[in-house]
Length: 289
Image 1 (cartoon, rainbow, N blue to C red):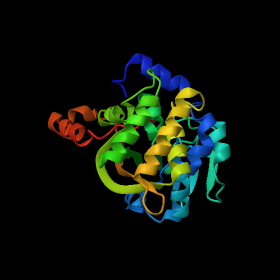
Image 2 (cartoon, rainbow, N blue to C red):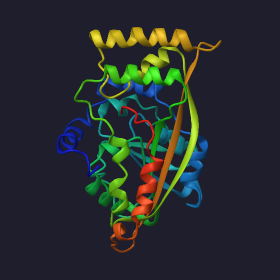
Image 3 (cartoon, rainbow, N blue to C red):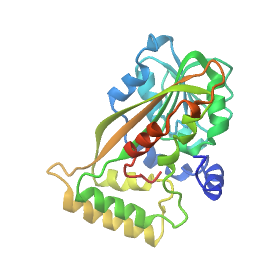
């Protein structure tokens, strides 16, 4: 995200904590979850889940926090947006906290795992990574996860076109594709590795419309919103199966990293050929946030 324009970085800082305030209901109902194998990969080798403490940063309505808690982890869900926290389903192993990625309010070396599901691109990367290193135990792990659209058929092509057509011209785009750049050169983390898993998100008509309206910059009222709803109704009627369902294919990308025990300049340890390979692998369809 260091390569994002100054205007977009400022816009992210100004809007990210309140951007989803009027979208929480659709977010909790219609946003996709994450495949079980992705959660298993994040936890592999960390120890007995019931002994682990996780900080889930930018937790939103707790979609991923609940997946972690269901494995027995104690989860501190960091979410600065009041509406999103209020929409989250309570869980005995989850504590929701009004804090930010840059200032989590957690103690030094207090958590075994830091996770960011579909959220890291909203943060200020340099202070965020420093904060993550501060709160992680030396034996801990950082996990950055994104669901990314995969273009597979004409339904997806038309759905994507309708979404982008409804976005205002000043909506930030491409943030996810650049979000990992600061981690590669961070002195706070090492041993970066990547895992990818495919999964489907099935939606009925209310789900398709609700999912679209959970996107951060999609209008919630007015002519553009009404046109989008009408177009989605037509798209669903054209593509729905005999169960009245359509589906989107996702690639869930999981990046794992270990905290550095000494300050290193990882940019010297990552050859340009590896960075180029990573960028090539990640030329997927960018999803509006």
